[in-house]
Structure formats: structure tokens, C-alpha cells
Length: 337
Image (cartoon, rainbow, N blue to C red; front, side):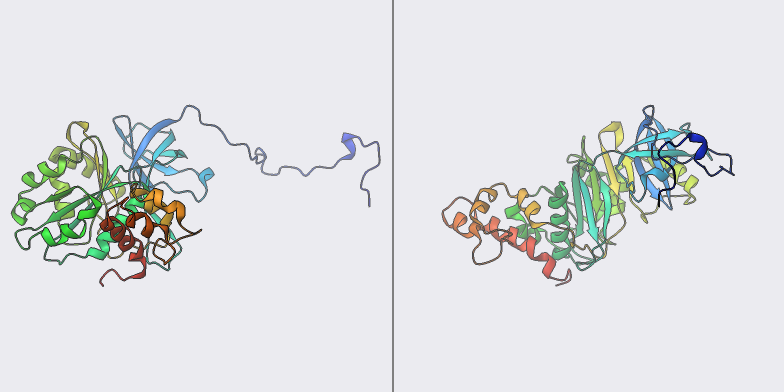
């Protein structure tokens, strides 16, 4: 039934009064063209510690971002109070496009992926050669996550005075991954090991991962000057922690602005439910041309895979194909196997 006649007048249209007296809601959001740029240093219970120029600013995510969450390493745009004074709070209104993402799932059958770090250039995988025993499957999984997310891997092997590194290094020789070997004395002395590791960190943002007891945080502490560490501790006191603990990821600046290190909590598992095999092979440029003869949706570990013929014709080292397939099959194996 038609509610109004053909010649309706504005006076004939009834409108509901705005009892609250405020402006009606709109889908048009402000552009925040004057927003300041910053970097997320750590996240704690909905509060984000950001670096804006030379100031540390506490912020929260704006409602307009919805479910989109910012993580350590994100480049963000902020508005509001950016003085950095205690008890002040800014708002994050934009999260810039990420150049790289380190992700993991709780397990291989868990579809919910967790973004650990954004915009890192490098992933330092720290593992002890003994006490605790090395877990090659966990290293494999970290490598897959690095290749999938666009990060370059770096192996950091600790406690070489308890076990030789050659056996573990042989396992990854075909991948041509840079590595650093340190002893237990160097680990606790800190500076000797830190100097060798620092050579690979200059001008880069490096995320450190490893399970508990391998000496990851001890090494990170040695890499960050004591005065920088203390200033970061003051920031964490605002969030209620009082001091730095690796219960959440934390970005720390290297001396002389040479780069950033991101300390992450110790991992017990590294699920790879989110990994697309077609992205992992991009880390093997010598094998990529051979995939042109692969069937559609090839897993690169099946009888009709074109990589077998490619390697047999001498275009690539067989050890490289073996390493690729070992990494891709790590989803099918438990980390302790």
C-alpha cells in the first residue's frame, strides 16, 4: 500500500525526534590526514606502546578499525595526545600495509592464525646444541614460517661447548642459511656472542624465536645497551609490568640506530595450518622454474611432480629438492619426532 500520494510535501513526512540531542550516526569516517606515524613496540592487554619520532606513546586501537589488530613491528598512524607523558593515551587510526608477517597457529589443525611480528626483515632461530636437546622439527617449522612470511632466516646455535654443531649444520647445509655458533661461556658473558650476532643485524629488523632454555633472551639482553634497556623498562612500568618479561613480543633498538631486535616469548609449538606451499618454494629460486611442469595444485612431493625431472636434468642440486620436501612435509610430523 502506498504511504504517500504522488505530490508529497516535506511537511507530510514524519521523522523520529532525536531524544538524545546528539548528531545522527554516519558511515563517513574522518581521514585523519594530520595523523602522526609510529611503530608498535609492544602490546599488553589492549594497550599498545608506540614509538613516535623520539617519544614513547601509549595508545589504544580506534573503534573504526574493527577486528583488525596491530602487532609488534606494525607501522601505524596515531591521533590524540602524543606527548608521551604518564597517564596519556593516543588512538591508532590506521595500520599500514605490512611488508612481511611472521605467523603461526597453535597446532596444524587449528585454523586460527596468530600474527607474531610484522615488518621484520629477518628471523633469528635460536636453538641450543644441548641442554635442552635441539629440536630440528621445530627449526624446520620456523624456517617454513619465515619463507612463507617473507623473512630471511638466521640460525643461532648456542652451547657449543656441550655438543658439536656439525651434525645440525649438515642438516641445513643445502639451504645455505647464515649461522652463528656460540658457547655457553660466551652466552653468559654476552658481549663476545653478541658481537658476532650483531654483524647480521645491522640496519635490519630481526625477530628472535626459540623455545625456553636456549638462551634467546640472554642474547637479546646482550645485544641491547643497558641504558636502552632501562628506558624500555620505564615504559613497561606504565603498562603495569614494572620490568621486561618475555610474555609478549617486545621491539628494542640496537645501539647507534643500527636496527631493531624483537624478543618473542618462548614457543612450545609452531603450527603451520596457514602455510601455502606455493609460497615456500619461492625461497628456492633454483627450483621455481621446474614447477612449470608440475600438475595443478602440486604438493611438490608426489609422483607427477615436475621437480624430479628438473633435478634429474641437472638444473639443481638434489639436496635442495630434498630440503624443500623435508620442510614442506614438516606439517605432517610432530615437532618432537
